[in-house]
Amino acid sequence: AQKITQTQPGMFVQEKEAVTLDCTYDTSDQSYGLFWYKQPSSGEMIFLIYQGSYDEQNATEGRYSLNFQKARKSANLVISASQLGDSAMYFCAMRSYNQGGKLIFGQGTELSVKP
Amino acid sequence: NAGVTQTPKFQVLKTGQSMTLQCAQDMNHEYMSWYRQDPGMGLRLIHYSVGAGITDQGEVPNGYNVSRSTTEDFPLRLLSAAPSQTSVYFCASSGQGSGANVLTFGAGSRLTVL
Image (tube, rainbow over all chains, first blue to last red; front, side):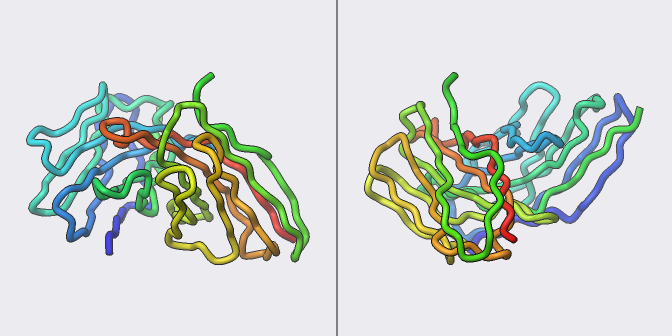
């Protein structure tokens, strides 16, 4: 069975600093995808970044990057130059390539950015 | 605007009542799914569909029914609501191929069962 673990219930970061949100996963599949979603206080789920298990380079999307370490089964999200608007819940999720829209989510990390 | 539309946004039910959460997408996505989000927990998959006429159970299917008669619509039915079903419900959709990489979520439906 697949499982996602986020061990940081809450994190604080100073504005303009970088922060790393941890995510480890467990799967027996060879082909899978890893995702990060942001959920602000308004409640919507916003896609941030995607990493495929066969992608050789770490994914980047603007200030977001995914530190993918396949052997350690970790997919940490790095946010550079934090902004006040980054304060939100962050969810790590994974999907097998043959499972379509079937995502497994972690428990989430609440990030607070201090001015 | 293209996307996933969920209705209603808020609903209060009494124990034993039935209701349907509606979900529609206009992106011609094959995959659709329903999740519930409880405080302190991530989203958990209730039911999903890989195309019209095809549905399957997720992690927490008990107490919920779904059907997929068209590509666009994927309603979630609560047959006899229970307080344990108080939650925020999200519908999501994704396409095939590279489009399957990203799940697009609706705005969510907050359900309270008294």
